Image 1 (tube, rainbow, N blue to C red):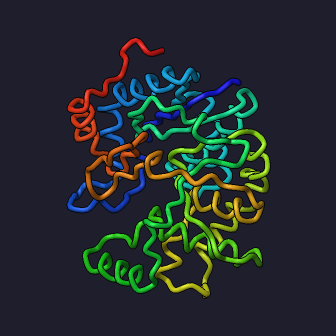
Image 2 (tube, rainbow, N blue to C red; image 1 turned 60 degrees about the vertical axis):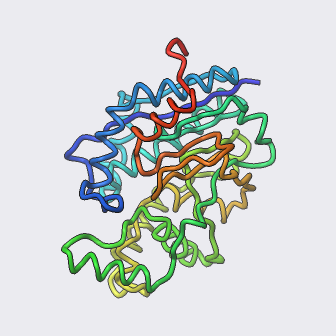
Image 3 (cartoon, one colour; image 1 turned 45 degrees about the horizontal axis):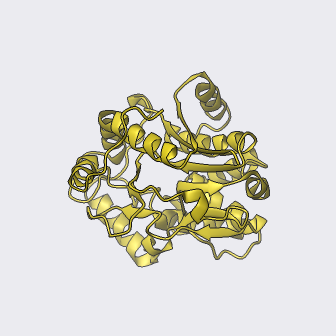
Length: 307
């Protein structure tokens, strides 16, 4: 069976970076911090992922800001000017899933900020014939209307933009709006696509890019609609997020999920810690120095010769 693990490393030019609220206790935009620390830690992060792929006898590929990506980006910039480059990069990783699923029997995508610290075989632990292996982010959702409204009021007072359009709550409400617009049951899951195991069968059923123009245009209409049925502080967190569209497509097309347990997707966000038994650390807060030190202390090292 042919298996591949892949990631992407695309440094977004400063002119294309949109401002995002800083991490708690920080002042630097999340996007600026991500660009800076990804570059500083790229070699180590890549080596950790390569080492893991080699340990389970899977091919490893990493995609960059090459001509193929730039052509992909150009289409969005010419046809959907609302969509930010950050969103385009995240659509690109899903586009690559489809490309690789035609070449490999099973595909595992890892965000570049996912650090494998195990030799357990992801593919052996998850039967991808049963569905798409992905993390349900619902525990991170604070979808309370009061919370979102209060966040909007606070940010207005300090002259900052509203509740982050990338928060789990934003994705939850954005998916509700899209589903209601289609006459569908609005109940939805919030997904995190930082780690995804899949094969062609279920990706075809997901049909992620089918009617892609329509879905992007609908997202824009909901975002900019005058006299919207949604309060301003809900409407302003709508966007063009890949995980919002994933949730909608998964719901409409009835794709089965294999929910990743926390040991396979440790969501390291507000606090730096690694529970016993963790296999993959998703370093949401981008505190790579802390993770590298933890790995050193626990004698977990990349193999420098991993190819």
